[in-house]
Image (cartoon, rainbow, N blue to C red):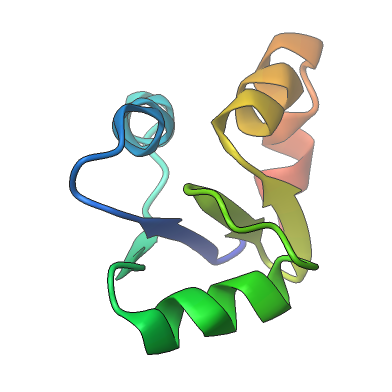
Length: 84
C-alpha cells in the first residue's frame, strides 16, 4: 500500500470524515497537523495552492480534500490508487 499523508486540523469535521473513511478501509496514514503557519504554507505549496483542510496525498498523487477522497471511493478508484 502506498504512503498516505493527510494534512488536518483538530476542529475540522471534513478531516474527521476523511480519517474515518481511511480507517474504515484499514488504511494506515500519517496525519500532519496544519495548524502552524509554517506547516500550512508547506501544505498550500504542495497542494497547488489549495488552502483548505484536509489535503490528502496518496504516494505522489495529490487527491485533494474529503469530497475528492469520497468521490474516488464511490467510483471504485480509491483501492487501485492505494495499491502499490
